[in-house]
Length: 349
Image 1 (cartoon, one colour):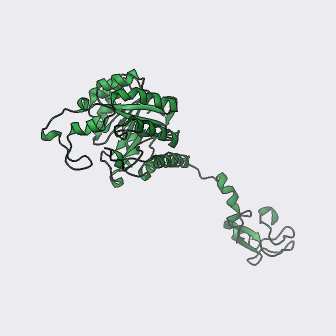
Image 2 (cartoon, rainbow, N blue to C red):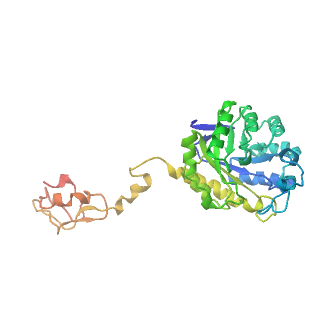
Image 3 (cartoon, rainbow, N blue to C red):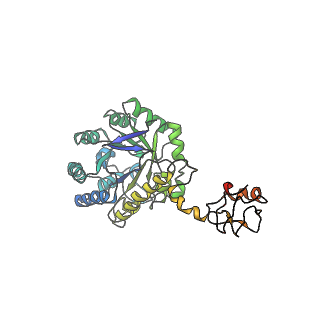
């Protein structure tokens, strides 16, 4: 496994803060100015990247009245696949302006392509990386085409079983992908936290020998922050200007202040992981005062015996550890000891 991958100079791996991807998706609701504002808000919130989705309704499905193409239940009930993607897609003629806006703001921008023509468009814009969406993980020809660009790849695994994940990884690596992150994902919109099975994240890392992360469709940040503690080095979340905006993905997306909280809390969770440590930390040094230790509690003359009456285990913690209490009882003071003296072996015979 690579220790890290790199996208536009930003290292991504266990030794670096989690890489936060703000998924623009369909949340522009058909207005490029909304898309511009979401990119601005993502940058302001501290996200590392903004991600688009590059498809047109006719590159992802066909306009067909057959039952196979109709959606029943859930957020998009009553629409056909073609109608959904017509509503949700990001027009291709916007892509250059969106890439330019992100670059002007200094936030990385890349996309999920859904067919070869989308890869061609993104290559013409010099996309620095590629994301394979969960539902496309079984599209091995698409993975092959993306891998052949030689760019870093991030692949989501919602709906996929172990064999399908293994096939997708092998296809990417066999076709030139050297930098890969696999995102654990539940393809529900929104997805309940209790279905996330986050323990899969470290298992995937071990089983497939790859860096891992989380594509999170829950409607708060707890799941994503928990994932960081289990080794997720990439977090992807849908972002919108208004969760009640009525767009295809608005209802399970974060608003700007929630994205800012995710960026902050994910980094705090990562920094709290630290390393294995049983020594006192800097923050604890001042707290020694509140530990217990052995102190002289009545004046003791030279040669006088130490007894339960004149030494006790009290706070602060600058004297001998309380475990030595029985060992010092009955021993003599080398010289006079004033009340309040921290006991040490140098002071007794």
